[in-house]
Image (tube, rainbow, N blue to C red; front, side, top):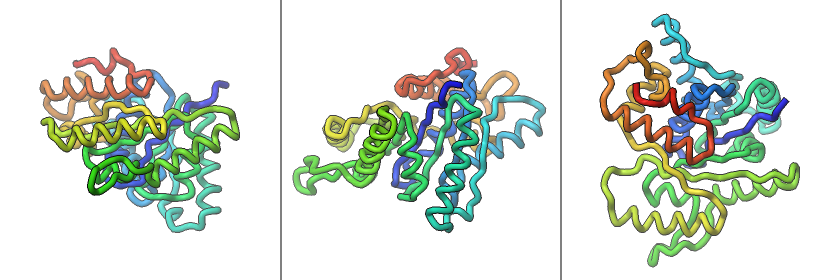
Length: 272
């Protein structure tokens, strides 16, 4: 049996859009025909877990079908458990779902935990959303407060660097790391140019690729309560009125998945 591809959506700063990216990647892969397993390691908030619970309920209530992932729920109480206990539960869950799927998609918390570090070490692909702000960049790199020159990688970059070393030593394989410029403002600004330059400088230094994320669109938020994404919209699944903004959102999702080298089920993501 082919080994599942492990995708970790990570960034130790909260509010960067990790769960939004994770659920869109999951539904895009599902509509592309992939068998997808999900693990939500954000044990307190569990946004991805809640999303797919909403999805199952909405589909059942409306008598329609859409692809669902394989899930293995980790109890919220593990957030307060000793590291050894949390790790044992995570390793058991990972082993179970990785044998049932083509992709294992792991959403991580906005903080440093033992199981989050372990997940990073298992990754084939790490996806890091970053808002269009030096506040978010601070988790990746430190800049000089006077010149804004890049001084050194920051804590999360070191976490990924260490994960790459561990995986290379254990299996001889590398981890592909992609930083997504997420929730970009619709207008160009001097701050964005400055930020672009520092992101590119850091990418050359620590070895990540830069890809497009998702803009801050109403459609992404209004579909969440139903457990749906733009990948799901069809003549039979249409809980909100369609508009040209939805077409643009589909194109964003196709571009996102293309930049990550993931099958996107293009015909299913086409405007309907």
